[in-house]
Length: 230
Image 1: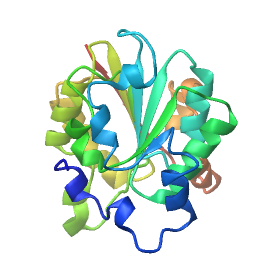
Image 2: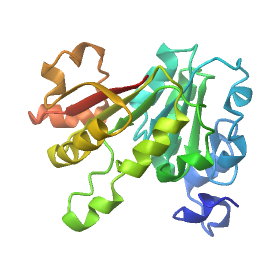
Image 3: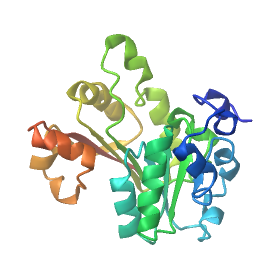
Image 4: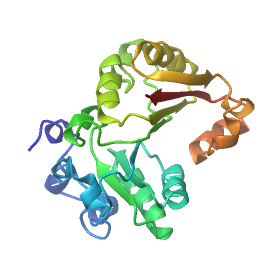
């Protein structure tokens, strides 16, 4: 087993009382959703998994939540393959179920630790990457658990192809203030950022997630950054 699989909260096949979502991962949705043991076996072979050519794009969404954005993007871009990562079983199954209802054959979900992307992809194997509303870990003592860290950005940059982008959204101003300086110091080229996505130049190309809509109803702004790997 890879180092990544060893760092999961639990191993799916060892759960003594699998709930309906665990059963769906191992059963009904197993052709399109992979547990922490199978996921690393596809490293370097994602285009074979999707049965596409060597230059066809493979995008990644880290933390798909309930899957509205994931399903929408897969449906709107049938010429692009899309991989999603979730650690919790319920959102993982909700996500792949939505994509399958749209008959999207270009979508796959993984149960894996997003901090261990090197277990899953070879350098240059990924195209565009989306991180929307990651866990903010708001307490000072928790910030070390945030996904956005200099080491994570360095690893992610290496996994993406030149000419691909990285999109980041959060409802946490504190997380945004934490992350933006890291983006600016990283190898990425920051095209732009805003403290109010829905009243910015980026609003027209934004997909409003269900989670995002809850904050908009409260009048809370969404924080956004868009970066390129040139």
